[in-house]
Length: 119
Image: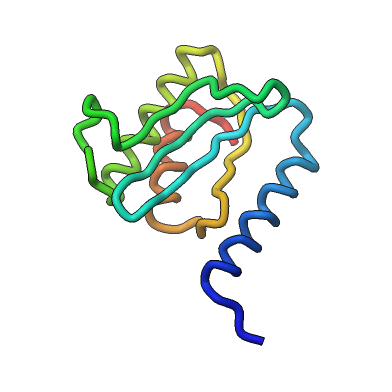
């Protein structure tokens, strides 16, 4: 039975999210979304349903508006780590959604780790 790319993506996303929920213990979630033109990251408190910090290539301050490459992803990772530190957040879960941990997603995660986030 052949699955479409979208079906496989949704299956991966649900698998990742369920694993995170099973071991959450009140920790925050660093959620990443990648589109064809931009990439964004949010620190989410699922217990209260609140976004505590966010960064995206849509922000003019980062200088990567409309860019979706590895350099832009790393800049978003550094920005989210900086904003997390300002909010007093040091530890979270990395929610890659249904995206494979490779390329742009990996660059964002590595930059966030270098910025001081632990996951």
